[in-house]
Amino acid sequence: MELKELLTRGIQTALQEAVRNGELPDGDYPAVLLEVPPQKEFGDFASNIAMQSARIARRSPRDIANTIISHMEYSWLNKAEVAGAGFINFFLNHTVLYDALKGILASGSAYGQAPLRADDTVQVEYVSANPTGPLHVGHGRGAAYGSALVNLLRAAGYRVEAEYYINDAGNQMDNLAASVNARYLQLFGKEAEIPENGYHGQDIIDTAQAIIDQDGAAYLEMDEATRLELFKDRAYAEKLKALKRDLEHFNVHYDRWFSERTLHPQAIEAACAVLKRDGKVYEQDGALWLRSTAYGDDKDRVVIRDNGVPTYLAADIAYHKNKYDRGFHSLINIWGADHHGYVARVKAAMAALGYDPQRLEILLLQMVSLFRNGEVVKMSKRTGQAITLNELIEEVGTDAARYFFIMRSLDTQLDFDLDLATSRSNENPVYYIQYAHARIYSVYRQIEEKGGTVPDTWDDVDWSRLCEEPELALIKKMTAFPEEIQKAAVNREPHRIAHFVHELAGLFHTFYNQCHIIQSDKELEKARLALITAVRITIANSLAVLGISAPKEM
Image 1 (cartoon, helix red, strand yellow):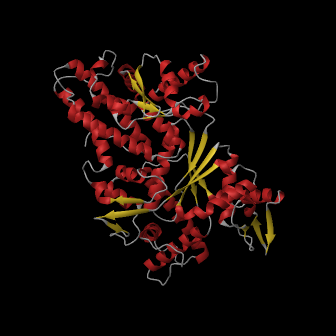
Image 2: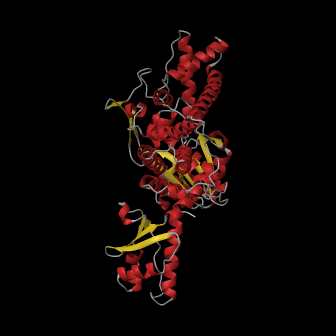
Image 3: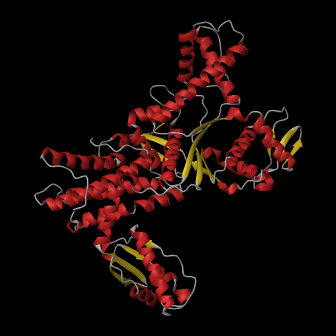
């Protein structure tokens, strides 16, 4: 049992006993809340339960606090003190900390993971960029955050499916084909223009060149309509393959890739049929309109244009209907902040179809700005185009990119410091964390070089030797990891884990500098080896949630 849970139950039991004995009146007492005091002299945990209960008990908070304490005769509790207006400060016995430490060592790579709850099904859809070119830095933030959220939810016990929605229907695919076609013709010295909404990146030239390298001038004499259709399929296959490859390299993995093409036309027609049957759409000026204002949108929206062509909203309605029909308990979409105006209409459409729109959670990513030497970097020196995710990874590495993308809350703009991300210093948070992990392995190697061995079991450790403040601080911090996982998952905040592991690394470096691990006192050495092994486990498990490697040497 975690320390907070143990103490919470202890307080609840004491409160119930006081009520049962007539020392406090019966009533609907509030939930017990615990916090870690800012200074160690105030104990391991503090609670304001007595102050929160004053209205119900009709007693002063200090009296309530003393009554609760009188029923807390637990072997794991050293003492409890009333402070200020009625706070209770709790001081735990070291034995309960040692028990927690043993639990971490026994759990190993499973430490922090909750049992799988089969009914808590969540689908997370993220990135879903058009397969028309390379991913840019903004996509990188969504990819890092989304994949970390998937890892986090799984660690918290949810059954999660990660999905990529491939926007492979519509005008963007026609523009892709036309852009490749123009570059293909230009490479043969022929006049051709990229369409107004076409794609101008180097990757389009590379695609056209790849077609020439494989098939030469075979398509020059082909009628343009046939050539465009062929180039659309060739370019689409190439771009999608590159997109999947780049995401894999960025430690982003999906359970399902859902093609928009599969929605045309049957799924869209089926969704519209339901809306028509229930009177949720109407015809006006030859178009089919959704009555979205009835569900909180600022205006009604066109679903089918007057020429019979579905809008993007029509495909999104069919897609989200499909997701609801797959039976997930919760649906999470991660979109760019520029899609904020789209949230209300999609939720309105789901309500119109009879689904609960509250089951659909849409998280909006704020913008990313890259900085070098204190100045904003907007364009790639190599291409003159927007910086791609691959270029960023080449410069700072996958681990640093992921950590910097994740370390800030999703709803805040991210200033990405390229100089800091590449520095090998304590100011670089990902380096600082990974160095802590590698440092532990360096201790193992030093022991082996001296002819010793690192234990693989810890049954005969004298845990009482771990009594220095840096040692106890490490144990207390590690015991908070399972709760951090749960809180971060519920609040969709992977950055909490980034902050947690950074703080843990800081406590480890303090311990390392103040407490000698390898020494002549072998009992103390073994106890400290057990401690740093637990730290290694907790750091590695934290980094695994973030999709970041835990190196053995640096």
